[in-house]
Image: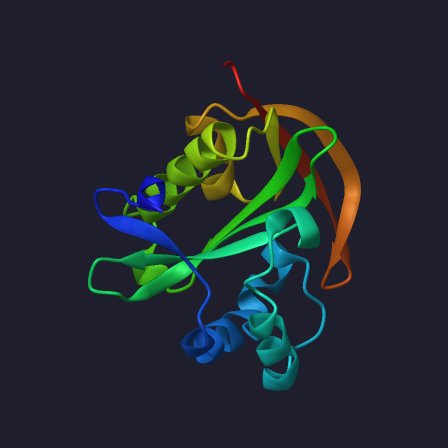
Amino acid sequence: MHTLKGKHIYLRALEPSDLEFIHAIENDETVWEISNTQTPYSKFLLKQYLDNAHKDIFEVKQLRLVISNYKDDALGLIDLFDFDFKNSRAGVGILIKEPNNRLKGNGSEALQLLIDYCFTHLGLHQLYCNISEENKVSITLFTSKGFEKIGLKKDWNKVNGCYKNEYTFQLLNSN
């Protein structure tokens, strides 16, 4: 898909060789708060997930893509979830794995590629995301792409025994 290629990164489908990369992300407790993960994932379960990753977004209601640089290094993941064909919307999540690859424009470029793909090729009317009130980096990223804060969910997520607020952001397709 040429539409998923940017200047510095491209988005690609999951491959069986991504098992170790995904296992490392899904079992990194430092990002569990972002992904609402509460327990580790086994390689067995992740392999099953990869075996089904080729299924159509219209069937499985989600799409996970690898953010890769042109040296073919996997940098992170970008997801569409809760794909709702009837209402033409989906949720978006993004994660750059290594801190030294963050704040370099990789997430921004990946998000723009996904937005363009969703509105142009999937015909979606809107995208939304849920971001912890404390996650200033993600709030800045999504608002820079036109997402608007539409609501605050108070005490939404329990993290280390404390409740945290979460914002919902929305981007409407203006075409």
